[in-house]
Image (tube, rainbow, N blue to C red; front, side, top):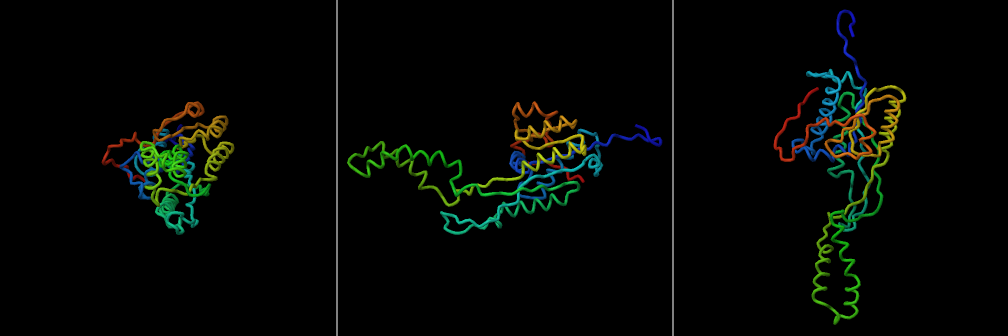
Length: 276
């Protein structure tokens, strides 16, 4: 399009929605990104979004020109859990507010807030049960159940002991005797995050605020929101960060593309451009 003798390029209205929990989990496959550094994580998120916009618009070059095509970049996560539950093995209260994970999340949120056109959407972390062993220990711990009747019989009548069965029971028992204080966890679950993502998708499409939505996730729970967006005429692109995607999710998006380069687990040094 020409205006006043100059060529005007189309300005797209792109919204990028990042599932923060999914994003952090997937980043482990990019060893060149320091996941313990909030600034590095925020830069990786920004770089990923920039690559998406540049591919859609051709807005190459340095500077923040690519942001002219961005309506908003939403980063969804949950406030850190900050209660002080009593640890049954350490026999003391654990202040979750001062844990390294809570400190990191608060620092990351501050970095996100400083980024131009980024918006933070925070749900909550809620306790869903009492302390329990990590999943990786459960198989070994449950093996003892198969020996319970035998052990009960031997306790009642020691002469009934069988050397082989006793040895097997002892091996199963080691799963419990070697359990350490740090091998149990307090089950926590995010609440309000998926709801916020779905509401934002619906709101932006119904109000015609965007023409393109890029969702960074691998969760098929967002299929209804994707269907709404497409019915309202918005282009819906999924970024699963190179994770495999279910056929159902593939069916209800307009395209699948990842903003970060394909991860190389054995790479030792790669550079992420620190662009504006």
